[in-house]
Image (cartoon, rainbow, N blue to C red; front, side, top):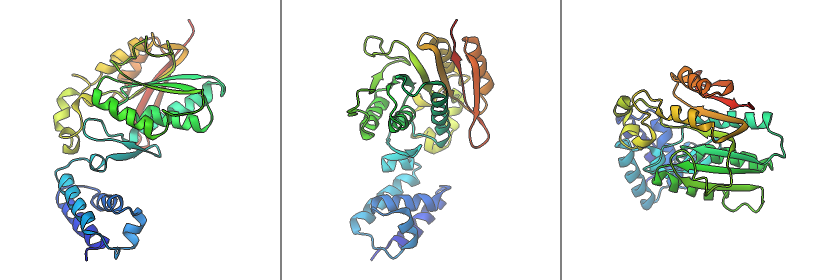
Length: 301
């Protein structure tokens, strides 16, 4: 009889030899998911038996992970800001650093917008939809009304965003003050298809890796995640130039633009925000001590 403990030891060893840093945790996560157990039970009850079908599935999972396919793709989901999101090949996997963008957005909304205001929010370069949906879920929990538009130019990403809207029941809200729409478009939605002519808040986590650096990223990323979601052009700033310049036509006055960026791009993004006429600029660090979110307000003339 194969037990959880047997598999945990074997899988940990194989993953370690394959260069997977969090080998024990990933082995336990795979076992917990496939055997419908909590992580705590995987660790505390190694004697738990594993069926032959479960063991076969785990061996297949192990082969994929040894090839450096991301564990989020193998499991078909990942956690972000306390929520589970459906992901898979063709969509960028949400990162913990991006949670700062959600936190800052919620802080700014709480501070600057009245509780009874109907908010119009755009999450562009949305990918899986994790940023906009996380913001929306927390606003909905507080009873705030909003319209959220999710935009991405990639058709594969759009399907994941739609799946996650449905997963978090944002497509079936009975309350009239909640509306979520998903658009396949180049940064901005088709004005004829959205009720929002302008937005109170625009959020974006665009591609920001320097084009020449993409092939050298860790194999989990460079071999499996979509380059279109990583490649930010020759200096990594292509999308920031467009977002800062063009957002002024899409923001209300006052309206807030918030952008995630690489740790070494904060000053460049700040300069682009200032050049576009944004004021009261924000510069926010992630919990690793790196600049992560920059933005500013479009004020009245």
